[in-house]
Length: 307
Ligand code: SF4
Image 1 (tube, rainbow, N blue to C red):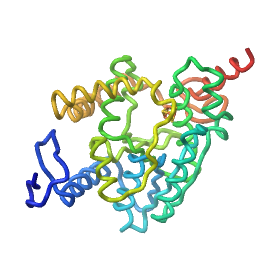
Image 2 (cartoon, rainbow, N blue to C red):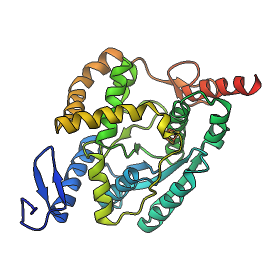
Image 3 (cartoon, protein in one colour):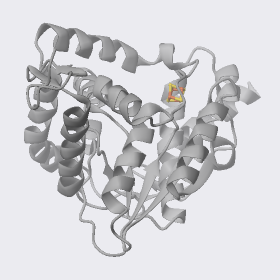
């Protein structure tokens, strides 16, 4: 196959648009959409500091490189990368190592924040204490809390995360299926800051996972290619399979899900967003109840440990 635009050998067939693209045009196709998203999601005023949640995997590594491309011509915008160490011995050390090397090669400050220091427990210990639970139901709130705290400590105005189009469509469907209107209304990207909460931006939210992978390969972006040993117990996997089936049957479905959500979001926010967060009674992080979700879960684990 040849590139539709220049006749060079194609490296990608973009099924949802029907385009065949060579390496150069494929890279440009990804970069253009990411630049548009960043411009749409964040006002890069002088002095802006962006914290990137960098796990060392392909999505966050590609997001880091692309954000670096976008802001490096500017001396008045800074990046800092934050890796959350969940305490999963068979998985996380490789990601931390990859993140550290990527940041060193790009000249980006790199920080690591561990569940051990924020909630006092590693995920391996959490799984031992509550083997019947879905580990991500603990790890997700712990990670959100850690990332927010690290971003605040780093003086960041926004937090960039590497969620791709598939992840975004999955999150929307998952919250629709649970009728979790509050969470649905709170999904990023965030256009307003709430006290103590750095708004999230999602530079890759229109880029399908396979395109992120191909982009990393074509540009030689190093990343940690491993799967968390607890991932197969996540509900997200089931919704990922559903989204993939829908996309296979009708290319463009992922974009349609996200676009529908974007159109409904202002109504959801008006109807379902409750008041401003208040400080958690235990850790001081933003919470919608007396305790934040992470502290509620820590309490649950303490009871299990004492039983
Ligand atoms: Fe944590 Fe679940 Fe991700 Fe593993 S798959 S790192 S347990 S959120």
